[in-house]
Length: 362
Length: 239
Image (cartoon, rainbow over all chains, first blue to last red; front, side, top):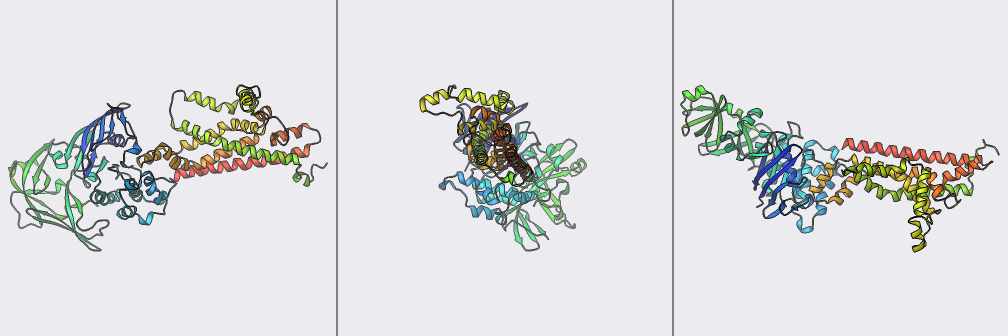
């Protein structure tokens, strides 16, 4: 397993960056508003910029260490970098772009097979095209493939969603999930869009003004009241990981098993890029969940989950209940409800929501 | 002699053929030899920032504004038989550069160099350094990213720079006549032959023939260069 450890100071113009963090396996989302220093952080990790002070290492391999004046140039770092705009070489076709990095590898350094990557990213039909003939999403997949074929130890992604249209932006998610799972490659994803990021990973690093605000799981951060401000602007959401259980040509089914039973979603839509058994993130807005003290029998709402209140978060004039129903659910309630239901930490409650309130992020 | 008779304009004499062929050779070699230096200097100016850049640029561009005769004179002072370097070359290796075919090439190279550099610099500046960054993250070192990414992307501009240097060399007169002389069959290029033909009474048709060739060559070269620059712009916007 590769752990990336950074402890760095860097400044440019009037901007100061001072970050200490460890990244282990899995997908980690680096989140912050524009200008928080997220992209600079990636560039420093990739060696495209030089740190002023501190060190960067992967496992026991020290990339940069200012005390010993050690600096590894970009091309020797073995880190994949997928740029926001793709940066495919316009004078090469897709195949040549994909193979670019392999030219600088020794035979035994080749980590992934060309065909395996082409298949995984579904880019076989594009191989003979040139970059300007590709759509935004296709460009991005080719850029990812090109990075992977250079046999990186870690994949850095800069705003993978923002170069794409709203309707297409989440198409990249299944591919990233697969890369992480099948190729066992850690991924750092930088984004200023939290809902997009959450549909990919719940492991987050929050960056603000060049500093780490917090690092941890999404709900831990919510509980610490660190995310609500930022989230309210972009839409506060619960993210629930479902499993794909059934795929037909015109519909598919997702399921989430909990202690109290099973949640099921059936949608009349085509399912692309995913296979049975894959995890798919589903979001649910806190306003769409109701709290009851008992199970409600005579109601059309079929999704009813029993849980205990793990915390009550008061944020300005809003109140959120974090309920543990086997997984964490953030529920928005009014002060009146809080008082009339006498909700307190540790109390057993039921969370009710309609199936249609579940939004599938693909 | 009939100025209007068609055959007079295609009936080239040996001296004229020699001058045309020599011109093409000198222009080709000087543009080609300029190329690697111009690419490197162009890249240096496009990608590097340093304090004394304006001094360096001023020096590089000197032959562009200096009277070519002065450039020729400087070359003579440096590489002539009694020149600073020429003396040494002559004594140590018996190499005499001035007033030779090679002198014509060197004179053309020096005069065409700033134009060539300018063209290389502009075409390299047009290539976003972001592509070099991408190449580096894929394992290419500085040279590899330059030769595999920047250079091929800038190719139309580089060819256009080559043609520009070639065209400038074709027209080179002042530095050549001072440094290489006007020796028919050896250093007498087209402009020098034209000059001689104008000087001698009764050589008007010869002068006309050379004039037409000069106009033709220059026009083809400039149009070709413009075409390639357009292609580079086009490439850039479509990428």
